[in-house]
Length: 352
Image (cartoon, rainbow, N blue to C red; front, top):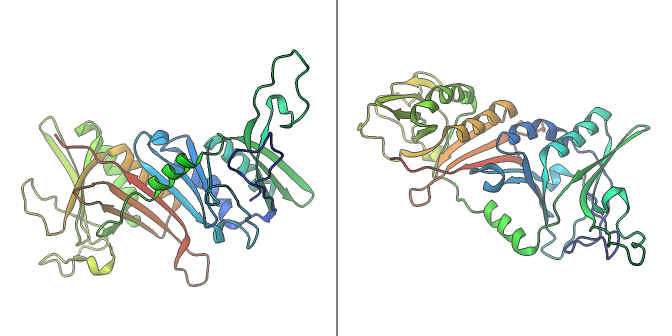
């Protein structure tokens, strides 16, 4: 990562000097694949850089509701020792950018077969003039303020490619703190149901259910590995239930009586949808959310093929639906990559 100070008149107010060229990391090649999935929530992102992690964040201002956080650990995103980041506020920097411009620049680097990529947060006067250049003639109108850019420079063999991504100005400390607080706002749920193997089926069910209740769907998750989606409207009720799904952490699993461990029908087997008023298994949680938000989360799971796609429901005093995608490690052990994840926090709506 390269963030370079061009001079007192052109440097963002909370940015110190840094510059580094690093090998193009494997994980960043996945950016062009990730961005279309994230763009289903909104066309703008907030890029947060810390010494430990790189985040692409979307708040309600970007999505109209859900909070989305894609995280790459610094060890996964940058070559060892290449990231040099300093600011006047905790060595963290954040700014907003359009996803389309970032996607085009990264796709260009991939098409080039880039071996290295340099990122530089800089500013340029309108028309391409370098910030801090000659002043306007005496008596003339003052020049417009320089605009910030994230400059991408990729190199592969004898070829090179440059691409500028317009950004907002770096966030002042108060806005940076608010973004970090939003990132850390939600606690983990009591348990999660792994829907990775059935995400496509659930997305198809949502297409059928959404029109019934004005676009809302009730989600019911049980510690036995049972997941149900329901919709009601105009005297009509419908839904789908799946049983035998993995539950994490394993200690949270509670078996249903008479199910033989809850997996007799196989992983994600369709189950009977209990009629309204049927007592639920202790620990079962419900929440209602917008079907389109849940469908976008499931679509990300289908497109990105994570090792796990975990769905949980937050506590009743602060309800939300939590979808977390964990990815396979590139190592020989085939475990979960601790340096890469995608989290989606969906707001709930009150049932009438």
